[in-house]
Amino acid sequence: MASVSEWIEGARPRTLPNAIAPVLVGTGAAASIGGAVWWKAVLALVVSMSLIIGVNFANDYSDGIRGTDDERVGPLRLVGSKLASPAAVKTAAFTCFGLAAVVGVVLALTSAWWLILVGAVCIAGAWYYTGGRNPYGYSGFGEVAVFVFFGLVAVCGTQFVQAERVDWVGVVAAIAVGSFSSAVLVANNLRDIPTDAESGKNTLAVRLGDAGTRTLHLVLLVAPFVVTLILVARTPWALAGLVAVPLAVKANAPVRSGGKGLALIPALAGTGAAMLVWGVATGLGLGLG
Image 1 (cartoon, rainbow, N blue to C red):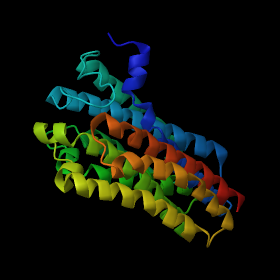
Image 2: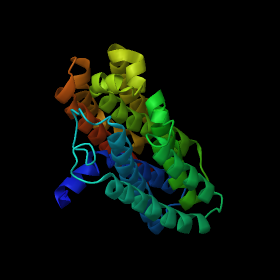
Image 3: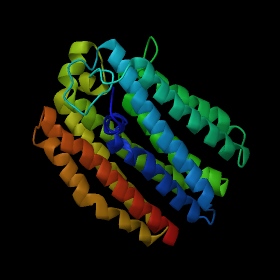
Image 4: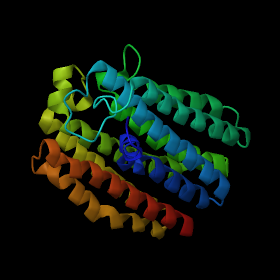
C-alpha cells in the first residue's frame, strides 16, 4: 500500500500554484473595486485546491487503468506504479470533488445560486479530462480546459463571490492566470510527447509537435507580463507582477534549449513557481492600489 508521502506525491503538490494563484489574483481584483471578503477568499481557495487535487487523482486513476502511465518519465502515479488500487485513487478523487462541491454550494448560497451550475460543470470537466469513454484531454483540449477552469472561471469566480461583480481587471487578470496554468500543462505534455503518442493520447503537444509546443510555452509565459502592463491602467502597483520575469525566463530555459524527458521537469516546476509569484505580487499590487 502507498505510504502517506506517496499519496502526497500522487496528489502532485507542484500543481497547487494552479489553484492558489487564481484565488490570490481574483481577491486582489475584488479588493481593487472595494469588494474583498476574507472568508469568501478562504472558501474559494478550499474549492480551488480541492478541485486541483481531485483532478490529479482522477487523472492518475483514468490514465492508470488505460495503461497510459505504464511507461512514465514524470512524477509518481499511484495506479500506474501499482502502489494504490484504482478504487482507492478513484475514491480519493471523488472525496476531493465532494469537498469542493459542499464548500462551493456555501459560496453560491451567499452570492448567486447559478454558481452551483458552474461548479457542476467544473467537476464534470475535471473528471472527463481523462475519464469516461471519450476524454477530451486525449483529443488535445486539455490546455483549453485548464485556461477556462483555472484561469477564467477561477479568477472571475473569486472576484464575483466577493465583490458581486466582475470588471475588466478581473477578466484580463484571468487571461494571465489561464496562460500560466496552460503553460504548466504544456511543459508537462511536451515532456510526455513520446509516451503519449505511443499510447494514443493525442494531447495538444502531440498534435503541435515538439517545435510548435516549445513556441507555445514561450507565448503563454509572455502573455501574463503583457497583462501586467495593461493592469497599470488600474494601478501602478500592478507592476509588482514583473518580479516574476526572472522565474519565467528560468522556467522556459529547458524548453528553449531543447531539453527532453527528465530535463523538462524543472520547466514544469519553474512555470508553477513563476505563476505563484506573479499571483502573489499582482494580487497584492491590485489590493494596495
